[in-house]
Image (cartoon, rainbow, N blue to C red; front, top):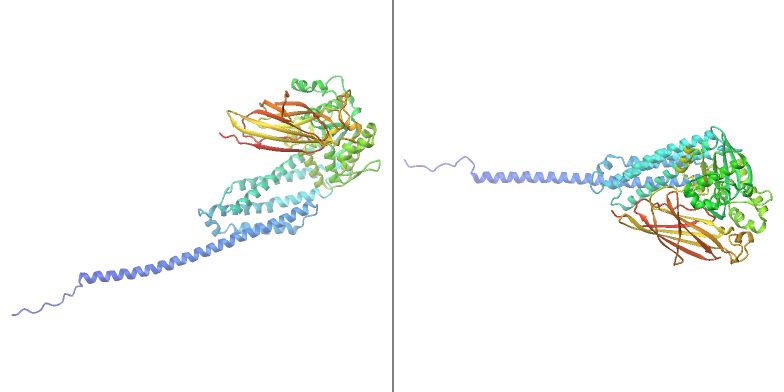
Length: 609
């Protein structure tokens, strides 16, 4: 039988299977690609939406913080002009800071904070919003309360300070200080530098503002906390009240020309025994003992025996104890402390109280007090008449301060300015109170401290009243550290701005050298530089010529001194080179309170470890 043709194999061939598999795979790949594209598109759209939403949030935060700043400036203006701040302004600030804080706390914002580039600026912006809102809800309302408390006219009224209200104000200040400390800590914890320069600047600006405000509130709290016991909360307190005339320079400011006794008893303040300096006689023996270093430096001038040279030292507690000792030696009364101010300080008080009319009809104002008491008076009054007039000035300003209803905010501001400039100094016999006075910046002490220090102090050696015309500048140049020391230079310029003619004899006299003639308007200054503890004198010049200086010690500081003669219109320069112990501490450069302010510059090269 003949074999037939074989039939087709029903199983698919290997080649066809591979082709179909490839086609299926391609189909699935296209579907996956479309799905990926759809997914990627959806993610891109979501990211774009989130980014757009985030940009909107950032702009909303910026807008609300800017609006809050405008409202805050308006509130500050109202308070500065002593108007009652409106509730609407405070509400405006709160509304905008709350909106900024809320906007910076959304899930989108929080998620974006984890991104490497965007995270730091977003965290910083949220931190700024939180700080601004805490200021608006915590600090500003308390500031408004304090402002209303002080401007109500009930804090000081008819010779009496309301100690209950003063205590309440102190507690309020303490609460504000604690809030500011918390805000300051939070701001310091934010990213210090981000890619957004404007944000870095805003964070630093707010941080600096909060730090300054915190310092001011701390000073105000310390001052008001001291006032309650000082004003006799638990019984009478008595103080020697000295008015220093810085037309004749002394270490603490000026010659004590007028004084009185201040009594404070449960907030009621009275003033007694106003008199000129010549009514407090010199004693045969010292009324205070400050140790051998003081005796070596000031014993020859009998500083602890009479009012005229009682404050040659710049350390106010020395002078205050001498004043109290002189009064006790004369009257037997043991005083609790001493207070000092000067014509510049009186002028600032008159800015708060308004002008004062004197018994002779003259009007004493903030603008004319310094010139009248330190210059004009000498041309129109004899020495006896002038002393009597100055007593009347002191009495009239004291009466205006105690008996008028006035703006307590403005008065406290003037007193704080005086304290900062050294024109209000207080000493207390009580050790704990004296320590608090030091912390509050009211003690006028020469601090026993290590680190860079330069304190220019001048004392009038001519026995005249020429220091009304004295100009001073000090430049402290601290070089690099090497081998545990650093080379420094203190450049001091003294200028006699007095006219060459027309000065009254009492102003221009030269009682230091009456047997010789001197050019009219000339004067003599004893210059002292309190240098850094441990510093060594490395050389000095006067107007470029080699100068030898005397060297003593006070309060742990070497004190370098020399006599400087000044002709009218003359400027002289004293350069003092020092070898100081190396230190990273911030330089301290106190300023002696005289009629004209001192110009001070400090240039410091860092110590490289």
